[in-house]
Length: 159
Image (cartoon, one colour):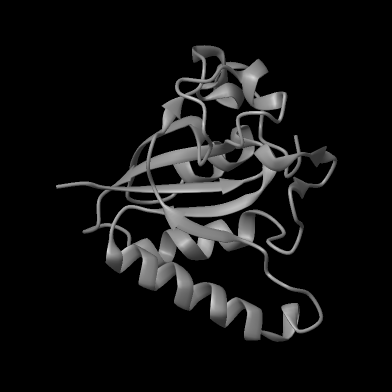
């Protein structure tokens, strides 16, 4: 039996590629979540009016990897102290967020964020990652799915 997890950490191409490569990840879908517009397009999300984040919905096998291991990978994929941006990508759609699917995920996400904030690495910066319920995930257009793989590219940290 698989479980779902949803993360936003900047450009979804990079996040999708990195998470898809983890042991226990069965599938990934890039899309939009956390906003107010039903079934938005990439152009809609880039306008800033939908309030959606570019995100990755991960289906994983909890017998092969844990949610905490996915969280650890998530924190390492981006700078969670940057508000509404990652590298050169700027806008609310590039925010850092964990969209939890159940109460156990919420508790794990909050605890891991607190540990990260208390770490030596973030002692002078605030971790701004949102932690909120997963609801209304809208898959992105087909050309965004497995973007790097389709083009024979290796991902970049900021794309």
